Length: 438
Image 1 (cartoon, one colour):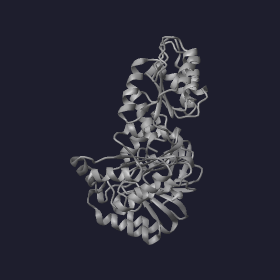
Image 2 (image 1 turned 90 degrees about the vertical axis):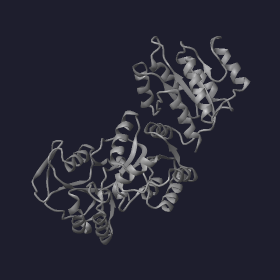
Image 3 (image 1 turned 180 degrees about the vertical axis):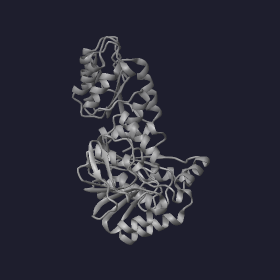
Image 4 (image 1 turned 135 degrees about the horizontal axis):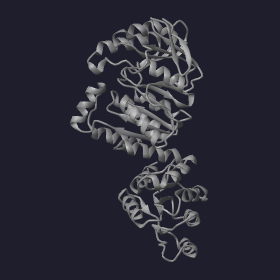
Protein backbone atom coordinates (compact mmCIF):
# COMPACT_ATOMS: atom_id res chain seq x y z
CA UNK A 1 0.00 0.00 0.00
CA UNK A 2 2.99 2.34 -0.11
CA UNK A 3 1.61 4.02 -3.25
CA UNK A 4 -1.09 5.56 -1.02
CA UNK A 5 1.36 7.15 1.43
CA UNK A 6 4.37 7.72 -0.85
CA UNK A 7 2.71 8.39 -4.23
CA UNK A 8 4.47 9.83 -7.26
CA UNK A 9 1.28 11.14 -8.87
CA UNK A 10 -2.27 12.01 -7.80
CA UNK A 11 -5.54 12.92 -9.52
CA UNK A 12 -8.18 14.87 -7.59
CA UNK A 13 -11.81 14.62 -8.75
CA UNK A 14 -14.48 17.15 -7.77
CA UNK A 15 -15.35 20.82 -7.74
CA UNK A 16 -12.48 23.29 -7.66
CA UNK A 17 -14.47 26.29 -6.51
CA UNK A 18 -12.93 27.89 -3.43
CA UNK A 19 -14.23 26.18 -0.31
CA UNK A 20 -15.24 22.97 -2.11
CA UNK A 21 -13.75 19.78 -0.66
CA UNK A 22 -11.77 18.89 -3.80
CA UNK A 23 -10.35 22.41 -3.90
CA UNK A 24 -9.30 22.24 -0.24
CA UNK A 25 -7.61 18.87 -0.78
CA UNK A 26 -5.81 20.21 -3.86
CA UNK A 27 -4.69 23.24 -1.84
CA UNK A 28 -3.38 21.01 0.94
CA UNK A 29 -1.42 18.87 -1.53
CA UNK A 30 0.12 21.93 -3.22
CA UNK A 31 0.87 23.86 -0.01
CA UNK A 32 2.32 20.69 1.52
CA UNK A 33 4.98 20.80 -1.24
CA UNK A 34 4.14 17.49 -2.89
CA UNK A 35 6.82 16.91 -5.54
CA UNK A 36 4.91 14.48 -7.76
CA UNK A 37 2.43 15.09 -10.59
CA UNK A 38 -0.91 16.67 -9.59
CA UNK A 39 -3.95 16.42 -11.89
CA UNK A 40 -7.22 18.21 -11.03
CA UNK A 41 -10.14 16.51 -12.89
CA UNK A 42 -13.62 17.90 -13.61
CA UNK A 43 -15.76 17.43 -16.77
CA UNK A 44 -16.20 21.21 -17.03
CA UNK A 45 -12.45 21.75 -17.46
CA UNK A 46 -11.03 25.25 -16.93
CA UNK A 47 -8.20 26.28 -14.61
CA UNK A 48 -7.64 26.59 -10.87
CA UNK A 49 -5.10 28.70 -9.03
CA UNK A 50 -3.61 27.41 -5.80
CA UNK A 51 -0.82 29.05 -3.82
CA UNK A 52 0.36 31.08 -6.82
CA UNK A 53 0.30 28.09 -9.20
CA UNK A 54 -2.22 27.68 -12.01
CA UNK A 55 -3.39 24.17 -12.91
CA UNK A 56 -5.32 23.19 -16.00
CA UNK A 57 -8.35 21.13 -14.97
CA UNK A 58 -8.62 18.06 -17.18
CA UNK A 59 -12.13 16.98 -18.22
CA UNK A 60 -11.15 13.33 -17.68
CA UNK A 61 -8.19 11.24 -16.57
CA UNK A 62 -6.20 9.97 -19.56
CA UNK A 63 -2.86 8.99 -18.03
CA UNK A 64 -1.78 6.61 -15.22
CA UNK A 65 -1.53 7.91 -11.64
CA UNK A 66 -0.85 6.20 -8.34
CA UNK A 67 -3.81 7.58 -6.40
CA UNK A 68 -7.20 9.09 -7.22
CA UNK A 69 -8.88 11.23 -4.56
CA UNK A 70 -12.61 11.38 -5.24
CA UNK A 71 -14.99 14.02 -3.85
CA UNK A 72 -18.03 13.79 -6.15
CA UNK A 73 -21.69 12.78 -5.51
CA UNK A 74 -21.89 9.20 -4.20
CA UNK A 75 -24.23 7.93 -6.90
CA UNK A 76 -21.68 8.49 -9.70
CA UNK A 77 -18.60 7.17 -7.88
CA UNK A 78 -18.91 3.50 -9.02
CA UNK A 79 -19.13 4.55 -12.68
CA UNK A 80 -16.04 6.76 -12.26
CA UNK A 81 -14.10 3.87 -10.67
CA UNK A 82 -15.05 1.70 -13.64
CA UNK A 83 -13.84 4.40 -16.04
CA UNK A 84 -10.50 5.18 -14.39
CA UNK A 85 -9.79 1.73 -12.93
CA UNK A 86 -7.19 0.80 -15.59
CA UNK A 87 -5.25 4.02 -14.88
CA UNK A 88 -4.97 4.01 -11.07
CA UNK A 89 -3.54 1.83 -8.30
CA UNK A 90 -5.88 3.02 -5.55
CA UNK A 91 -8.65 5.48 -4.77
CA UNK A 92 -9.50 7.49 -1.69
CA UNK A 93 -13.25 8.05 -1.75
CA UNK A 94 -14.11 11.09 0.34
CA UNK A 95 -17.76 11.08 -0.83
CA UNK A 96 -20.42 10.23 1.78
CA UNK A 97 -23.84 8.71 1.09
CA UNK A 98 -23.07 4.99 1.08
CA UNK A 99 -23.75 2.28 3.70
CA UNK A 100 -23.63 4.79 6.56
CA UNK A 101 -27.00 6.13 5.32
CA UNK A 102 -28.37 2.78 4.19
CA UNK A 103 -27.08 2.76 0.59
CA UNK A 104 -25.52 -0.68 0.98
CA UNK A 105 -26.03 -1.65 -2.65
CA UNK A 106 -24.22 1.44 -3.92
CA UNK A 107 -21.23 0.61 -1.69
CA UNK A 108 -21.25 -3.00 -2.90
CA UNK A 109 -21.20 -1.76 -6.50
CA UNK A 110 -18.24 0.51 -5.69
CA UNK A 111 -16.24 -2.43 -4.31
CA UNK A 112 -17.17 -4.67 -7.26
CA UNK A 113 -15.93 -2.07 -9.76
CA UNK A 114 -12.67 -1.70 -7.82
CA UNK A 115 -12.12 -5.47 -7.66
CA UNK A 116 -12.81 -5.76 -11.38
CA UNK A 117 -9.79 -3.52 -12.04
CA UNK A 118 -7.61 -4.83 -9.19
CA UNK A 119 -7.48 -1.50 -7.35
CA UNK A 120 -7.80 -0.75 -3.63
CA UNK A 121 -10.24 1.65 -2.01
CA UNK A 122 -9.93 3.76 1.14
CA UNK A 123 -13.36 4.94 2.33
CA UNK A 124 -15.95 5.88 1.29
CA UNK A 125 -17.20 8.53 3.75
CA UNK A 126 -13.69 9.44 4.90
CA UNK A 127 -11.48 12.50 5.37
CA UNK A 128 -8.52 11.29 3.28
CA UNK A 129 -4.92 10.39 3.98
CA UNK A 130 -1.49 11.87 4.74
CA UNK A 131 1.88 10.40 3.88
CA UNK A 132 3.83 12.98 5.86
CA UNK A 133 7.36 11.84 4.97
CA UNK A 134 6.31 11.70 1.31
CA UNK A 135 5.03 15.30 1.63
CA UNK A 136 1.62 14.03 0.56
CA UNK A 137 -1.36 15.68 2.27
CA UNK A 138 -4.31 14.09 0.50
CA UNK A 139 -6.96 15.35 2.90
CA UNK A 140 -8.75 18.56 3.88
CA UNK A 141 -7.50 18.25 7.47
CA UNK A 142 -4.78 20.41 9.01
CA UNK A 143 -1.23 19.56 7.93
CA UNK A 144 1.22 18.22 10.50
CA UNK A 145 4.97 18.07 10.98
CA UNK A 146 6.93 14.88 10.21
CA UNK A 147 7.55 12.43 13.03
CA UNK A 148 6.94 8.87 14.13
CA UNK A 149 3.20 8.51 14.84
CA UNK A 150 0.82 6.90 12.34
CA UNK A 151 -2.79 7.79 13.15
CA UNK A 152 -5.51 5.41 11.90
CA UNK A 153 -9.00 6.79 12.44
CA UNK A 154 -12.37 5.33 11.58
CA UNK A 155 -13.84 8.81 12.04
CA UNK A 156 -12.68 11.64 9.80
CA UNK A 157 -13.74 14.38 12.21
CA UNK A 158 -11.98 12.69 15.12
CA UNK A 159 -8.89 12.32 12.95
CA UNK A 160 -8.96 16.02 12.07
CA UNK A 161 -9.35 17.07 15.68
CA UNK A 162 -6.58 14.66 16.68
CA UNK A 163 -4.20 16.09 14.08
CA UNK A 164 -4.86 19.64 15.28
CA UNK A 165 -4.39 18.58 18.89
CA UNK A 166 -1.22 16.72 17.94
CA UNK A 167 0.17 19.93 16.47
CA UNK A 168 -0.55 21.73 19.74
CA UNK A 169 1.09 18.91 21.71
CA UNK A 170 4.25 18.99 19.56
CA UNK A 171 3.73 15.52 18.08
CA UNK A 172 5.26 14.52 14.76
CA UNK A 173 3.34 12.20 12.43
CA UNK A 174 4.44 9.66 9.84
CA UNK A 175 0.96 9.20 8.37
CA UNK A 176 -2.76 9.70 8.83
CA UNK A 177 -5.57 7.65 7.36
CA UNK A 178 -9.29 8.14 7.80
CA UNK A 179 -10.95 5.02 6.43
CA UNK A 180 -14.65 5.73 7.03
CA UNK A 181 -16.91 2.85 6.03
CA UNK A 182 -14.00 0.49 5.33
CA UNK A 183 -15.70 -0.90 2.23
CA UNK A 184 -12.38 -2.40 1.08
CA UNK A 185 -9.25 -1.54 3.10
CA UNK A 186 -9.82 -1.45 6.84
CA UNK A 187 -8.04 -1.01 10.18
CA UNK A 188 -6.41 -4.44 9.92
CA UNK A 189 -4.78 -3.60 6.57
CA UNK A 190 -3.40 -0.34 7.95
CA UNK A 191 -2.13 -1.93 11.16
CA UNK A 192 -0.15 -4.46 9.12
CA UNK A 193 1.15 -1.79 6.75
CA UNK A 194 2.34 0.65 9.43
CA UNK A 195 3.87 -2.19 11.46
CA UNK A 196 6.41 -2.50 8.62
CA UNK A 197 6.69 1.20 7.68
CA UNK A 198 10.19 2.36 8.58
CA UNK A 199 9.09 5.95 9.31
CA UNK A 200 6.49 4.85 11.86
CA UNK A 201 7.62 4.42 15.49
CA UNK A 202 4.17 4.06 17.05
CA UNK A 203 0.62 3.51 15.81
CA UNK A 204 -2.47 5.23 17.22
CA UNK A 205 -5.83 3.66 16.38
CA UNK A 206 -9.30 5.16 16.88
CA UNK A 207 -12.03 2.58 16.28
CA UNK A 208 -15.75 2.35 16.80
CA UNK A 209 -16.07 -1.27 15.71
CA UNK A 210 -14.61 -3.90 13.37
CA UNK A 211 -16.31 -6.22 10.90
CA UNK A 212 -13.85 -9.12 10.97
CA UNK A 213 -12.74 -9.74 14.56
CA UNK A 214 -10.44 -12.65 13.77
CA UNK A 215 -8.55 -10.71 11.12
CA UNK A 216 -8.35 -7.67 13.40
CA UNK A 217 -6.82 -9.72 16.22
CA UNK A 218 -4.19 -11.17 13.90
CA UNK A 219 -3.26 -7.73 12.56
CA UNK A 220 -3.25 -6.11 16.00
CA UNK A 221 -1.04 -8.83 17.45
CA UNK A 222 1.37 -8.51 14.52
CA UNK A 223 1.58 -4.71 14.77
CA UNK A 224 1.95 -4.72 18.59
CA UNK A 225 4.82 -7.21 18.30
CA UNK A 226 6.70 -4.71 16.12
CA UNK A 227 5.95 -1.35 17.75
CA UNK A 228 3.64 0.28 20.30
CA UNK A 229 -0.03 0.32 19.27
CA UNK A 230 -2.21 2.77 21.21
CA UNK A 231 -5.96 2.15 20.91
CA UNK A 232 -8.86 4.47 21.71
CA UNK A 233 -12.15 2.59 21.45
CA UNK A 234 -15.40 4.53 21.10
CA UNK A 235 -18.85 3.01 21.57
CA UNK A 236 -18.16 1.40 24.97
CA UNK A 237 -21.61 2.08 26.39
CA UNK A 238 -24.87 0.72 24.95
CA UNK A 239 -25.85 4.18 23.68
CA UNK A 240 -22.35 4.78 22.33
CA UNK A 241 -22.47 1.47 20.44
CA UNK A 242 -25.74 2.52 18.77
CA UNK A 243 -24.23 5.87 17.81
CA UNK A 244 -21.17 4.10 16.34
CA UNK A 245 -23.39 1.85 14.22
CA UNK A 246 -25.21 4.84 12.73
CA UNK A 247 -21.96 6.79 12.25
CA UNK A 248 -19.86 4.44 10.12
CA UNK A 249 -22.15 1.43 9.73
CA UNK A 250 -19.78 -0.56 11.95
CA UNK A 251 -20.57 -3.37 14.34
CA UNK A 252 -19.51 -2.07 17.73
CA UNK A 253 -20.11 -5.28 19.70
CA UNK A 254 -19.40 -5.86 23.37
CA UNK A 255 -16.75 -3.57 24.82
CA UNK A 256 -15.58 -6.28 27.21
CA UNK A 257 -14.66 -8.45 24.21
CA UNK A 258 -12.68 -5.59 22.69
CA UNK A 259 -10.91 -4.84 25.96
CA UNK A 260 -9.84 -8.46 26.34
CA UNK A 261 -8.69 -8.51 22.70
CA UNK A 262 -6.53 -5.40 23.13
CA UNK A 263 -4.87 -6.87 26.20
CA UNK A 264 -4.31 -10.26 24.59
CA UNK A 265 -2.73 -8.68 21.50
CA UNK A 266 -0.37 -6.51 23.55
CA UNK A 267 -1.94 -3.20 22.52
CA UNK A 268 -2.15 -0.26 24.93
CA UNK A 269 -5.70 0.94 25.49
CA UNK A 270 -6.37 4.54 26.55
CA UNK A 271 -9.64 6.16 27.58
CA UNK A 272 -9.35 9.71 26.25
CA UNK A 273 -7.85 11.73 23.39
CA UNK A 274 -5.47 13.42 25.82
CA UNK A 275 -4.13 10.02 26.87
CA UNK A 276 -3.73 8.96 23.25
CA UNK A 277 -1.34 11.82 22.66
CA UNK A 278 0.49 11.49 25.94
CA UNK A 279 1.19 7.85 25.12
CA UNK A 280 2.26 8.83 21.60
CA UNK A 281 4.63 11.48 22.99
CA UNK A 282 6.18 8.97 25.37
CA UNK A 283 6.76 6.38 22.65
CA UNK A 284 8.15 8.97 20.26
CA UNK A 285 10.94 9.45 22.82
CA UNK A 286 11.50 5.95 24.25
CA UNK A 287 10.64 2.37 23.23
CA UNK A 288 9.98 1.25 26.83
CA UNK A 289 10.83 1.80 30.51
CA UNK A 290 11.07 -0.22 33.70
CA UNK A 291 8.74 0.14 36.69
CA UNK A 292 11.13 1.69 39.25
CA UNK A 293 10.80 5.48 39.08
CA UNK A 294 12.76 8.28 40.72
CA UNK A 295 10.96 11.62 41.06
CA UNK A 296 13.01 14.83 41.08
CA UNK A 297 11.12 18.04 41.86
CA UNK A 298 11.58 21.61 43.09
CA UNK A 299 8.10 21.66 44.61
CA UNK A 300 6.82 19.25 47.24
CA UNK A 301 3.14 19.26 46.20
CA UNK A 302 3.57 18.12 42.60
CA UNK A 303 6.13 15.56 43.82
CA UNK A 304 3.52 14.07 46.13
CA UNK A 305 0.88 14.07 43.37
CA UNK A 306 3.31 12.25 41.06
CA UNK A 307 4.13 9.72 43.78
CA UNK A 308 0.44 9.04 44.47
CA UNK A 309 -0.29 8.55 40.77
CA UNK A 310 2.73 6.33 40.12
CA UNK A 311 1.81 3.99 42.95
CA UNK A 312 -1.86 3.96 41.94
CA UNK A 313 -0.78 2.94 38.42
CA UNK A 314 1.24 0.02 39.77
CA UNK A 315 4.69 1.56 39.34
CA UNK A 316 7.30 1.58 42.12
CA UNK A 317 9.06 4.45 43.80
CA UNK A 318 12.69 3.42 43.36
CA UNK A 319 14.61 2.83 46.60
CA UNK A 320 17.83 4.79 46.14
CA UNK A 321 20.97 3.03 47.27
CA UNK A 322 22.98 4.53 50.12
CA UNK A 323 25.81 5.63 47.84
CA UNK A 324 23.34 7.74 45.81
CA UNK A 325 21.83 9.24 48.96
CA UNK A 326 25.28 10.23 50.31
CA UNK A 327 26.32 11.72 46.97
CA UNK A 328 23.13 13.83 46.87
CA UNK A 329 23.75 15.01 50.44
CA UNK A 330 27.25 16.09 49.47
CA UNK A 331 26.07 18.86 47.14
CA UNK A 332 22.39 19.57 47.95
CA UNK A 333 21.39 22.12 50.63
CA UNK A 334 20.52 20.45 53.96
CA UNK A 335 16.84 21.38 53.67
CA UNK A 336 16.48 19.27 50.51
CA UNK A 337 14.91 15.82 50.78
CA UNK A 338 17.25 13.16 49.36
CA UNK A 339 14.82 10.26 49.63
CA UNK A 340 12.60 9.51 46.67
CA UNK A 341 10.85 11.82 45.75
CA UNK A 342 13.89 14.11 45.78
CA UNK A 343 12.86 17.67 46.61
CA UNK A 344 15.40 20.23 45.40
CA UNK A 345 13.29 23.08 46.91
CA UNK A 346 12.11 26.22 45.14
CA UNK A 347 15.46 27.90 44.38
CA UNK A 348 16.87 24.88 42.51
CA UNK A 349 19.02 26.12 39.62
CA UNK A 350 20.74 24.63 36.57
CA UNK A 351 23.57 23.01 38.53
CA UNK A 352 21.34 21.50 41.21
CA UNK A 353 19.03 19.89 38.64
CA UNK A 354 21.81 18.67 36.35
CA UNK A 355 23.91 17.06 39.10
CA UNK A 356 20.86 15.46 40.70
CA UNK A 357 19.63 13.97 37.43
CA UNK A 358 23.09 12.56 36.67
CA UNK A 359 23.54 11.14 40.17
CA UNK A 360 20.13 9.51 40.33
CA UNK A 361 20.42 8.20 36.77
CA UNK A 362 23.52 6.20 37.74
CA UNK A 363 21.65 4.38 40.53
CA UNK A 364 21.11 0.72 39.56
CA UNK A 365 17.77 0.70 41.42
CA UNK A 366 16.34 3.38 39.11
CA UNK A 367 14.75 2.44 35.76
CA UNK A 368 13.38 5.86 34.81
CA UNK A 369 13.17 9.45 36.03
CA UNK A 370 10.27 11.90 36.34
CA UNK A 371 11.59 15.46 36.51
CA UNK A 372 9.20 18.16 37.73
CA UNK A 373 9.84 21.90 37.48
CA UNK A 374 7.63 24.68 38.86
CA UNK A 375 10.03 27.60 38.41
CA UNK A 376 9.93 30.63 40.72
CA UNK A 377 9.80 33.97 38.92
CA UNK A 378 13.52 34.57 39.60
CA UNK A 379 14.73 31.41 37.79
CA UNK A 380 13.91 31.21 34.04
CA UNK A 381 12.43 27.89 32.97
CA UNK A 382 14.95 27.78 30.10
CA UNK A 383 17.74 27.38 32.67
CA UNK A 384 16.16 24.19 34.05
CA UNK A 385 15.34 23.01 30.54
CA UNK A 386 19.05 23.29 29.65
CA UNK A 387 19.92 21.26 32.76
CA UNK A 388 17.57 18.47 31.59
CA UNK A 389 18.96 18.58 28.05
CA UNK A 390 22.62 18.66 29.08
CA UNK A 391 22.47 16.13 31.94
CA UNK A 392 24.19 12.86 31.05
CA UNK A 393 21.53 10.22 31.53
CA UNK A 394 20.88 7.13 29.42
CA UNK A 395 17.56 6.16 31.05
CA UNK A 396 14.02 7.26 30.09
CA UNK A 397 13.41 10.72 31.45
CA UNK A 398 9.89 12.16 31.50
CA UNK A 399 9.44 15.87 32.13
CA UNK A 400 6.66 17.86 33.81
CA UNK A 401 7.23 21.61 33.51
CA UNK A 402 4.29 23.56 34.93
CA UNK A 403 2.53 25.85 34.32
CA UNK A 404 1.48 27.93 31.31
CA UNK A 405 3.29 31.16 30.49
CA UNK A 406 5.83 30.59 33.25
CA UNK A 407 7.39 27.60 31.49
CA UNK A 408 6.60 28.40 27.85
CA UNK A 409 10.19 29.17 26.82
CA UNK A 410 11.58 26.20 28.72
CA UNK A 411 9.08 23.82 27.11
CA UNK A 412 9.93 25.26 23.69
CA UNK A 413 13.64 24.61 24.30
CA UNK A 414 12.92 21.03 25.43
CA UNK A 415 10.77 20.32 22.37
CA UNK A 416 13.49 21.64 20.05
CA UNK A 417 15.68 18.85 21.45
CA UNK A 418 12.95 16.20 21.07
CA UNK A 419 11.97 16.18 24.76
CA UNK A 420 8.17 16.31 25.15
CA UNK A 421 6.57 18.03 28.13
CA UNK A 422 3.69 16.57 30.11
CA UNK A 423 1.82 19.50 31.69
CA UNK A 424 0.72 17.80 34.93
CA UNK A 425 2.42 15.33 37.30
CA UNK A 426 -0.40 12.84 36.75
CA UNK A 427 -0.02 12.88 32.96
CA UNK A 428 3.75 12.45 33.31
CA UNK A 429 3.18 9.46 35.62
CA UNK A 430 0.79 7.89 33.10
CA UNK A 431 3.41 8.29 30.37
CA UNK A 432 5.79 6.15 32.43
CA UNK A 433 3.02 3.61 33.00
CA UNK A 434 2.50 3.17 29.25
CA UNK A 435 6.23 2.84 28.66
CA UNK A 436 6.36 0.12 31.32
CA UNK A 437 3.76 -1.94 29.44
CA UNK A 438 6.12 -2.64 26.52
